[in-house]
Image 1 (cartoon, rainbow, N blue to C red):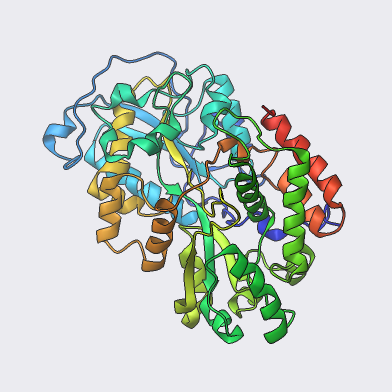
Image 2 (spheres, helix red, strand yellow; image 1 turned 45 degrees about the vertical axis):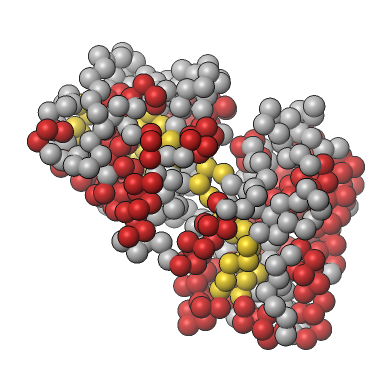
Amino acid sequence: MYSILKCYSCVFIKEVFMKKKVLAVLTAAALAAGTLAGCGASPATGQAAAPAPAESAPDTAQPAQTADAGSSEASGNYEECTLTFDWWGGDSRHEATIAAIEAFEAAYPGIKVEYNYGAWTDWETAKATEYISGTNPDVQQTNMDWITKYDSGCDVFLDLNTVSDTLDLSTYDPSSLALLTDAKGGQAAIPTSLTGRLFYFNKATFDKAGIAVPTTWKELEDAGAVFAEKLGDEYYPLVLGPYDRAILVAFYLDSLNNAPMIDENGNSTFTKEQLAKALQWIEDLEAKHVIPTCDYIDGEGADSFDKSARFIGGQYAGIFEWDSTANKYIDALGENGADFVVGGEFDDLGPNGSGVFQKVSTAFSISAKTAHPHEAALLLNYLVNTEEGALLMSTERGIPASSVAYDVVSKAGKIDETTAAAHAAVMDGSPMYWNPLFDDATLKGDNAAYNDVYGGLSYNDYDVETAASILYDAYIAVAPAK
C-alpha cells in the first residue's frame, strides 16, 4: 500500500544532517524552538542563539558598503553588538554560510554573529513557534510563503526599505522584490535566488531510440510507445515523483482555464471535475509508457533519481527538476554527463499552455523586533552584495538573484553551462503564475496531500474520482474557490 511504501521521489533534494563539529550552548528560548528542527536532533549552532531583544535601537544606518565592506571607513559606521542568524540546508550550504559569516566578522570587528542551522525536516515547525512568540532571529533564511502565513500583521519581518541605505536593493529586479512584499507593501524579504522546474533529457537514450529529444508535450507523449517498442519496457522518456505530477497538473489546468490553479488572491480557480480530468491525464501518461508508476519507481529502492541505477544507466531518459540542480545529475552520469541536456519549455497543452514556472527559492529577512536593524542590514548586504561575501556564499542557495552576486559567481566559473542554460530557459520563458500556497505544508510534504493522492492513485489505492475529491478538498482548505 502506498501509505506504507511512499514514492521516494517526493523529496527530490534530501537535506543532510547538520554539521556536528560546530557546537555551542543555546539559550532556553532558542532551545525550545530549536529542538523541533532536524530528525530528532538539535540543530547545530555557531554561538549561543538568543532571541532578538524587543526594543528598537536608534537608526544608525549609513550608505551600503558594497565595494569595500572591510574598509576603515565602513568599520566606524556601526555599533558593537551580537546578531542572531539561522538557516536550513545541507552540509555544503552550512560550510559556505559559516565561512561568509566569519569573513563578515573580520570585516566588521565588534559585530558577533551567533548562528543556528539544521536540516529542513521539521524546521518550519520550529520557526512557526518563534514567529508566534516573537523570538525569531535578527536575520533569517525565509520561505516565500511565510510572509503571508506568519506576518499578516506586518510586524514580524522588517520592511527592508527602511534600511535600504545600508542594504542595497537596487541589485534586484523590481519584479522579484515584488514577490516578497507584505500586506502593506513593505519589503519583507529579499530573494536569494529565483528558480523553476523544467525538463532535462538524456540525449543518448533518445538517440538510441532513434528519435529527437522532445520539444513539445505531444513529442514527449509519443516517445513512450517508441521507447517501449525499440528499447524495452524498462525504458521511459520521463520519470516523475508526486510533486512533479502536481506541477504538471497545474500546467494542465492553467491551459484549460487560462488561470493559475491558485490565483493572486489565494483562490482556487478550478472545479473538482476539471481536477479529475487532469488526474486522468497523469494516469494516461503511465498507460502510454511515458512515465513509470510509483510502484515501479519504489521497487528500485534508490533514495533519489540522481542515485537511481535506472537513471544512471539511461533507462529513465528524462526528469523534471529545478534549474539549479543540473550538476548532481551530470555528476551521476559520469563520463556520459555531456548527454544531459536542457529540454526547455513545453507550451502546447493548449492555447493558454505553459511549461515552466518561477518561484523564489529561498529568501533572507530581518526581524521587525531586532534591536540592531542597521547592523543586520550590514550582514545581509555583505552576504549578497559584496564580492567576498557573494563568492563565499556561491550558488549554495541557487543562482543568485542579486546582480552583484550573479556577476561575481559567474566570473568565478561557479555556474556551469548546463545550469546557466536551464536558468535562462526558466527566466526567459512564459511562466505560469505560482502562488506560494501551492506549497502549503498540508499539500506538499511527506504525509501531505500530493504524496497521498498522486502516490495512492499510482498504486491503485484510489480511483481518479476518489483521488480528485481528496485533492480538491485539500486545495479548497488552503485556497477557497472564488
